[in-house]
Length: 154
Image (cartoon, rainbow, N blue to C red; front, side):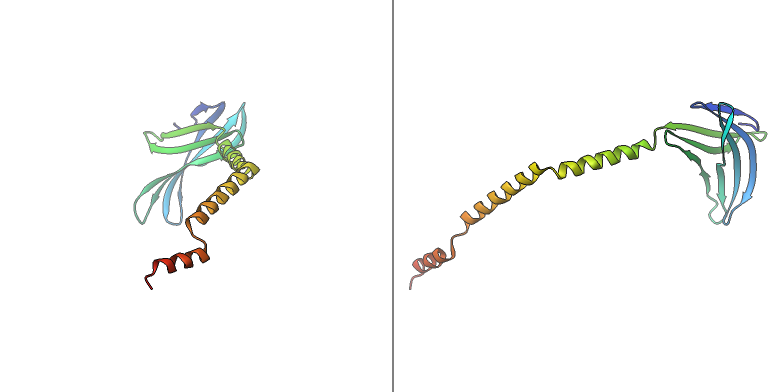
């Protein structure tokens, strides 16, 4: 995108207003200004960055994210192309936050299933059955003494 170029995604218009070089605490960055509008009304200005860290020399991209209840907008600044133009990635992702709602509904369903009385009754019956089996395997203490005296050759 060159300065002034516009791209559309998901009913939104993204206008590239240019690049500003900034200095951070441990990096140098090229910060883009992108104006987001819908139906001609400006909604937001987003500022993705391309950072170069001075200590390591690593180049990283800082994505600009605008979250909403029904959609998320992501803008990532790529590499400079030529004549002041940059490669820019624009993403429109609907219903991303609703994934968390689905996880919440599953957790509530799991809690309801665990609180079901039928499962508690089944667990109690299994515990009682195990106690009966364990009692049959171990002889009573008085019978054990009698059996041990009968086996000893005294």
